[in-house]
Amino acid sequence: MQARTASRSRKTAETAIELKIDLDGSGVSTIATGIPFFDHMLVLFSKHGLFDLDLKVDGDIEVDYHHTVEDTGITLGEAMKEALGTKEGISRYGMAYLPMDETLVRVVVDLSNRPHLEFHAPVNTPSAPNMPFTLVEEFCRAVASNLRANIHIELLYGRDGHHIAEAIFKGLARALRAACERDPRVKGIPSTKEAL
Image (cartoon, rainbow, N blue to C red; front, top):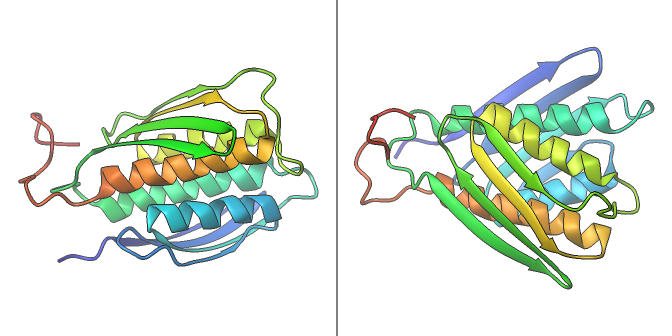
């Protein structure tokens, strides 16, 4: 069976990124972005998606975290798209309800090749202590745009900023894992258009 792996390098005036991913891994990761909370979220993403992920980011975090978080999402989305290849035999759709103590999040994914993010959370959603909540949405938007996936994320309820961010990252991982999984009953590309 063909390996579904990809390596990406991305260098701009704001970030330098080296990323390797294996979609059929066991959730092993080595993550260093310079943002400890973001590292924690990406370790969770790898573990719960069963994606092996090797990531090193050197970003202008002295400015703020935005460039590092967004550019990581861009690079991750590009790498996952490359690793999926033609998407023959995949499930295509994935969904996860993810509880984290008082928090519940719903994530639904379609690897449709039509990029779109719907992200629903109250305007006053709290941030984790050391990463703005707005960057969670920016990361998800960058992944959706560059994976060319339709991703819907909804915070159903929650109070703790850490739990909310964690539930979103874990839910995204579980939904993407389900969508990327090979289904032996699927012959060819799972679309009546015969292309994704």
